[in-house]
Image 1: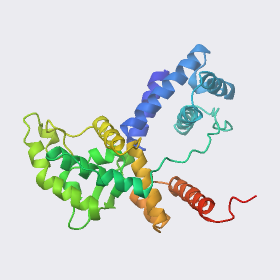
Image 2: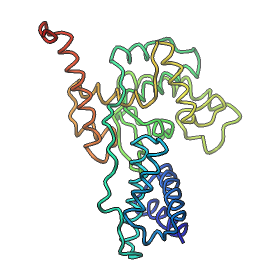
Image 3: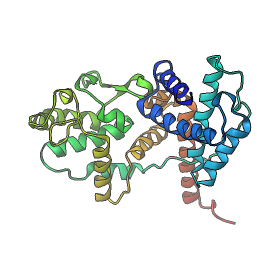
Amino acid sequence: MGERILDDFLGYLAVERGSSVHTISAYGGDLRAYLGHLRDRSVDPLYASRDDVTSFMAALQAKGLAPSTVERKIAAVKSFHAFLVREGLTDVHPTVDVSLPKVPARLPAVISIDDAERLLSQPFPKGPVGYRDRAALEVLYGCGLRVSELVGLDLLDIDLEAGFLRVMGKGDKERLVPVAGAASVALSEYLEHGRPYLRAKKAATRQDSSAVFLNVRGGRLTRQAFFGLVRTYGRRVGLDLHPHTLRHSFATHMLRGGAELRALQEMLGHADISTTQVYTHVDRAHVREEYLTTHPRARKR
């Protein structure tokens, strides 16, 4: 019974909500754990109580899971029970007055503009791989893409003449992202001097024929490979880098340069502007640090 209802809910996420494969997989894992908890308590999910939900939350917290992880799992439980009520399968909604655990505010990690310059101005290997790596890093930082969006780019998504990339974001939502300057130049050079040589590798498949960023075997560059690429180039200039750090840095540096929040929201592909607003907090932290380090009486007590 529980598995069938869960399958219906995951199908709803895919068809009605347009959720990504990663989101559906995460919800599936979280809810299977919840249904297992209910089975241990001999409770039908259609008649679960508030106590059943809070005991599940307590069990997660007892395992030492991070507050953000517990929050995500309970959010999945809330969505699941809301779905059951909406579909008329039950009148019981045990999560209505269950609050999500508080997650400490955590500002995204960013690098300075000078660090970004050092990263992107370092010598890259000569040859196709060097052209690819420079272009990938320039586009990630220059356009603020997610890694999945970067490696998912196809040739038809690029219009350098118009100065835009067509990006498929979360929930298969399409958006146009400006590309210019160093990112545009690096991408153009890679497409001319790098990609044709990587594409010539015999291991390339028909499915990879449209991919922009290719590996040394001619197939589409994977997220895992790109994570390694970012770490490698970061370490060469003394930075401990994660790909998402470059996206966060893009957003923060855009705000410091005077970008409007709504325009930044569009470029980042955020459905809710509150997600974008976190970067205003990062920028305020930067402003305060500048004040503390430059004003002659800022630290005087």
